[in-house]
Length: 109
Image (cartoon, rainbow, N blue to C red; front, side, top):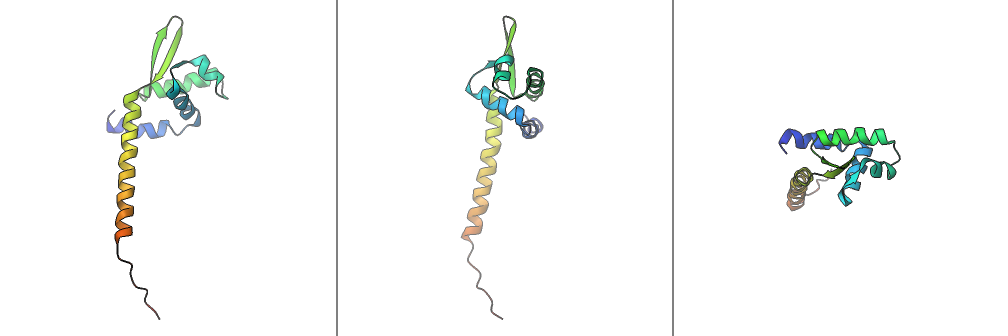
């Protein structure tokens, strides 16, 4: 996943339905009907969300008979995790820098 695509991943996950689908697919691959049964949205809404996730590289589909089975792309999930790990390390480093500074003495009037 390149940088532009990784940045786009944050936007894709901004939608609650798409986030819910990602969470469900993290458990195991599923068909649209199975996803729709677990969500408070219509089957067409699930299909639309899957279309966005697929174009962003988050999910892959596989034809099994007359059904399409959707699964998460581990590379996409790993790339986002790497970004989060980088942000976390930067935040901890910044915190350590602030905590390590000597306390400035308060100046009285």
